Image 1: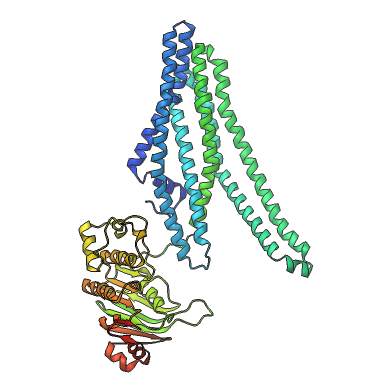
Image 2: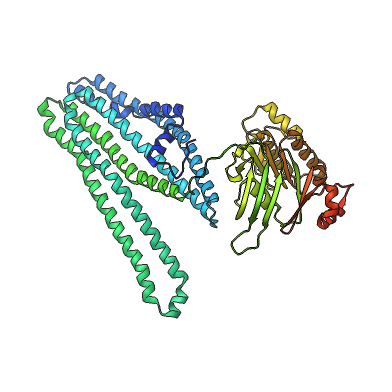
Length: 549
């Protein structure tokens, strides 16, 4: 899967995307050759058939006609395989684009709930446009190869009448593409500005009428309409020139063959065969190329450029932490500039290999603390250091945050657990008390508790030295929860448990109590005396049920 980001150039990205799977690319080329069989056969068959029928050799004429029919059968088989193979090339590109753009939308920090939806729509446009570009380029290249081979087989001298005007027209068209792309981009921006002005004016109609600013509103919207009209005219000018150039390149070979072919000694069959090559294969492929590059290609370039611009600046390279000694120094975090801090000037040290339980009332900031340690959010003030590295820059393979909402992918449990041997997957499930879950079960059809166990097993297998369970066992019964926590503790590394049962605190080596912005740490026995809140929580714990009542 190819990567895509702000530093990625569109052209090289598309080239790498096509070659990302060399085997599929080779199959695509081979099946395209089969699909292009009529492009080579059509002129040769017509020329030989006409000359045979003219010489009253009916069997030979029918044989060439039959060969043309058979070539279309091959083309039909090849076309089907081309579509199948093209899908295997394009879909990974779509997944890579969607992953990059969704991650960019989520990491941008902007409060824009529609960002992911827009990114998804833009990726779909890019995927469709990429498919169109590959299809049109493929059709032209193989049609050109077929025509050159066919005309050379008929009468090589005729290539001098066919290729020069065609290549001149194609070259002029390709030369105009960058300008066409720029003007298409300008038109899209002008169209968006017009739409935005209409939304703003419509939303403020009451204020406009009340203040008597109708003329100002009309000038504001009218300026955007004028800008869009100018952009449309500039785009139309380039499009018209493109059409004229392509028309000359496509039809000039026909006139030259009709005028000079017989003078070069071409028989009527050879002239008709060459015209068939130009009119039935080359001209449609040329106009299809122009449509593909001029519409799909430009749309693809514009979309990828806008997707790239929408991504946040490239993040600094991640680094491996030296151990997982974790330290928070003066960390403050609030959800918004005017909001009260959830975490306020927190100093905390979590030693490597620690087993820490985090407890406190609902909504007090436990999940926020977990996200800060995992580097998923950045503190407004202070620093979060994991193994000597800022938390946001720690290699993702070194920490695992498992939230309360267990996410599983479509597919089997084994596919959800990643690239591991079945034996290791089975051992992980058994260690977490999930031995009843079959590896071939459909993950999305599991119940809530089993989905949590699958998500936990995925983290267990990842071998991250820092594991944070953010109420990740909320759907499990107390006995199952105890088994999960004991398995992660026995596995080694640092374990932080955001607890929803005080029983988790009894299993931990140390406990952190969040009481407003006040934080207290210690063992269970120490906190019973030092923290009234913890004593109150523990006082509601029923040891028979092993859960908070």
